[in-house]
Image (tube, rainbow, N blue to C red; front, side, top):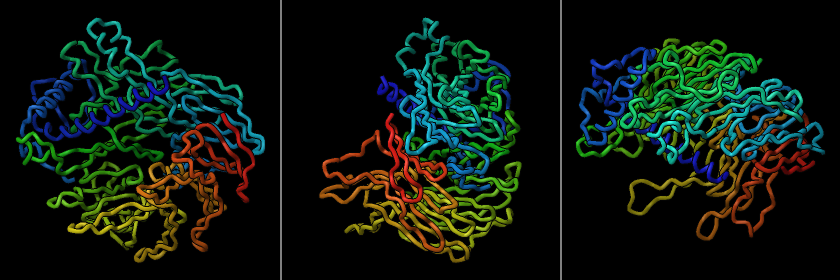
Length: 636
């Protein structure tokens, strides 16, 4: 049953990503072709949906655009015009770990949380609560088990409230009752992003206090000022309008405080984002969790997709990629993306109230949340324009600074041609950006004056970093890969391959001359760590200068990379001593073992006082934080 559930979730996720790609692709071709005799009219301002007829007209237009694309309709020049367009590492709190968050005071959902006495972790479709008050005698106090239709993916913790976030697959009651819709029983189920609230004042006996749910798949969740914010993406089944004129096009929500079953959102809580003709919703929900039993859940739906998410204490930013169709291929029914731009939407946060502010279209695409930042009221971001496989439109990279109304006030463009961004980090008045093609240029950009940003320095080294972490105001740690350049006979371009995992310590005290102070290469080709794609996997103890991460090490085999061992490594990283291995928490090598053990593979590392804990899917281990000797192990 679990395998079936995971397959269903994966299938629906793929469908969702495909839909997002498709609808973003057709967005620009529609911008000047909206019929004025329909209730829906594209607008540069946000529009509240007034009626069922207006919403239906919107999706009729989306459907029309889809048919045009399928029939190979050419894209006109007019419709393809291109518009120009506080940092903290988190890592600790008191004498125990907190999640490695991007912004100080804004907690990010993760698979493991601790309050200093207990560890809360996700294990398949359970949440396990372990008492770690005595690291030599850990005890499982409770295992919260969920039905097979719910799969927990993330946790948040606020005082005595534990929030379990995940995907719940359900059939819509309205569809089940309709004879016309019986066929929908054989389609993938609708997914609701569901949040269960638990009172954990007694961790051994957690009590569920509330359940809320929003249709769609999770984009991101944040907790700040005792308020939970989470964003989902919904792809309504608008194609069903052909069979059922009354098909429900609104997203569904559920609140155990007031509802017996999921119900569609009211029209006055749905709005159309500026210039949007996408076929999906971004749903933003917020609730004050200081009293989750009594406080009101507020949910708003916005027609227009969301991809990347960045949030400060005051504002939420969502992005949507705009795909330009290559006109030369339009009549050939070959879709080849030309320029790709990004629409950034800004929402103001005031407790549980979320208000759209403005949007801006920027040249290029945004890699991830670390490519965005807010500082002193200005939004800063870096983008990659073009691609590195099209000789006619080679890639280049840009930095944009926007004011509170999302108007561009400063920019640096045309950086690192034929390369793309692999990582970025904003730290106060400085921005750091890593691009890559054959070498790893680290750019240092001065953003102190928003209207006049400028590149101060550049460092070119082998390999690349795909996550940058601040050590202090003058030093950065880069986590990424060593690279191998293989010159191919008869080819103008060398073949670039990744080697082992690479840690770099950068000195940026002289902004004009950044230096790589030290490096560490781990394993060979195939070696990887979750930190290379999920920053939450980083362990940090600032006072001790310790940084650790789970890792799977591969070595050179006769024909391909061979698995060697897995576990975790802990380094002391300081400007004085560089990168020094302190804790080797790897399992012993076993030549007979060809693959990693999924159940014991370490996912997260935390500390409580002088003890270090490694958390895997089925076990938790404790270690002395000074000697790194194992103290105990508990399976669950």
